[in-house]
Structure formats: structure tokens, C-alpha cells
Amino acid sequence: MGLSKKLGEWQDAKLIDSTTAEKISDFEKQKAKPIALWAFGGLGAFAIILGLISVVASNWMHTPDWLKLTVDLVLCLIIALTLFRVISQNSTSSRSQWLREILVIFYYGFTLASMALIGQTYQLGGSIAKLLLVWTLVTIPIVLLGRGKFLTVLWIVGTSVSYALNLDVFNDFIRQFIYQNYIAEALLASLYILSPFLFIILSRIPWLVSNRPIMAGELSRYSWLAIIIGGWLCQFLWYDAINTSDNEIILLQIFLSICLFATAAMVTFIPKMYASRTKDTHLAMRVVLISTFIMGATALWHEDSYPLIGAIASITYMFILAWAALKIHSIRMFNVMTAFICIRLLFIYFEVFGSMLETGLGLVVGGVITLFVVWGWFKKSASVAHYFGLSQTSKRESDTQ
Image 1 (tube, rainbow, N blue to C red):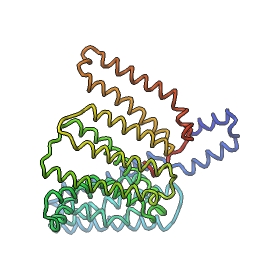
Image 2: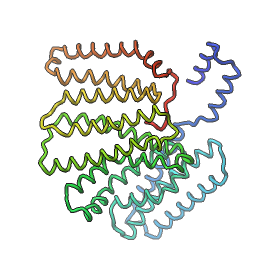
Image 3: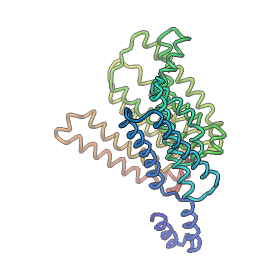
């Protein structure tokens, strides 16, 4: 509906003729994927898996082990053979692509259910963290058979959970070689904080970029989103007093040194990892990384709470993100950051002039400031966009978020 309306407007404005409009419409219909169909298909596949698990769990004590394992094996073979048949047809139709994606999602989730069933049947023991780790590793070939965003997001969530739950394994490994507790704790904390860096590196694997561009793009996008959200959350460190002992100061110093080294390395190698991107994009990514590190590093060294500094730091950070949005030609992100800045300005009045809220003056002043900022944005946004060589139809680069 939106495309048809746009094509009509372009025809009325004499930008395109009817023949060009028909060609554009036909091309978009061939390339378009029904998002709802793909999303609900994936949810339906996982609902079936959860239903099978519930059926088995409700009749666990009354179902013979051989029957449970036989049914599980038969279902695995059916899914595998069906998936192999669909892939071997090598069809590019939307129906075949949808069926292939659903089967991959179903196989991905059913593998976890099968592993849990085998573990329970033979009382193998072990933790959920180890189960998820093995499941994540052995299902990588299955996931690589897929192409869609839903599967990619599902895999990112599963891998992130597996990674977080298995950091205790890294903790035990680190403490075998490092006897100083504060050094081990600093290394473990850095594994949490720097996890988006690991996913960015994973998303830049050449084979993945060339053969699975959607997966590489989504991995990169969500990793950068995690970095941006992490930088924004750093403002709240100013809202509490941070009292540190001597050992905790050493811990913070080691932790920040690790983060500084990792950030510097990432900033250095961004042009190589994103070789197809422009220099402006590289600059924007570097500035965002450096700003995020500064936001976190500066907020860890104070003994009293400073909410105003946190609010100012947050607004400054969002200004940087708005500038980065212009550099990567993303008008949508620029608009979002502008809206967040207005909202944050309003909340500053709630925080700083809380007593004024009783008479309503805080709301009035905050509303006036917000309207002033919005008016200024509407007045200057076109000239700012023109200065950076943008237009309202500029496309954002998919791998830079």
C-alpha cells in the first residue's frame, strides 16, 4: 500500500512514467517477503517444539524410555530428510525459501529438546549452561543453512544466553592460572562488557559476509546496538555514590586498562573489518566507540552522586549519536536521537527542579524548552542534512548500527 501511494505521487510529480512504475512494482513484489508470514512461521515452529516438550514432561514417568527416544529419533530423521529435500531442489521461490527457513528453525530448536531428553533419560548430569554451550556449537551448521532475519535474531539470542551462562567456566579457567582475585575478577568483568566486540569480530568473518550477508549484517547491527545502549546506561552510574577500597581501585584500573586496549584495537581495525564502508562511516564508528568508553570510564570515579552530570553526559552522548547518524546517512536515527534529546531535557527538569512540580512550573518550563528544541530542529534540520549531503530518502548502511 505504501509503495503504491509513493509510485502514484511520483507519477503525479512527473518523476517517473507508468511503465517505470509498473517495473518498480513488479520488482518489489518479487523481492518482498511477507514479514508476518515469516515471523509467525518461526513462532509456530517453536510452539510445536515447546508443545512436544510439554507432552513428554507431563507423561514422563508413564512413558517408556525406548518409546521417548524412538519418537525423538524418528522426528529428527523426518525433519532432516525434509530439509535435505527442500535444499536439494535449489528453488528460489518464496514458498521454498519460507519452508526452508521454518525447517531450519524447527531443527535448531528440536536439537536442544533432543539433547535435554537424552540427558534426562540416561541421567548424564551437567548444567544447563553446558547443555546450551554444546547445543550452540553443534547447531552452527544447521543455522548456516538458513537465510532469514528471524533465524539470525533467534540464534543471536540463544548464543548470547549461552555465552553469559558459561562465563563461570572461563572464571574457573582463569583462576587456575591467575591467583590474584582482583585480576581474575577484572578479566571476567571485561568478558561481560566486551562481549559485543566478540560478536562484531564474528560478524566480520569473510565467509560469513560473502555467503550469509543477512546474518553478518544482523550480528553487526545488534552488536553496535548493544554498545550504544551500554554507553547510554553509563549515565546512571552518576546517580549513586561509588565508594571503592584500595583493592577495588586496583580492580577498576585493571578492568579499564583491558577495556581501553580492546577499544583501541577495535578503533584501529575498523577500516579493515568494514572495508566496504565509507570513511565517514569509519569515523562515526570510531567516535561512538571512544565516546562509549569515556562515558563509562569517567563515571566510575566519584564518591558522591551527581545526577546533573549524568543527565548532561547523556545529552552529550545523544548529540554524538545524532552526529554519527548524519555521518552514516541515517535520517531515521537522527530523528530518533533528536526526539530522545528533547525527552531527556524534559526529564532534567523533573530531576533538578522536582519541587517545582508541585506548582506545575517544572512542567511548563520543561515543555517550553522541549518545544523550543523541536522548533529549532524543524528550522535547521534541512540545512544540516544538506550540509552533510543527505536527503530524506537517504538509505542507512545496514551494517553500521
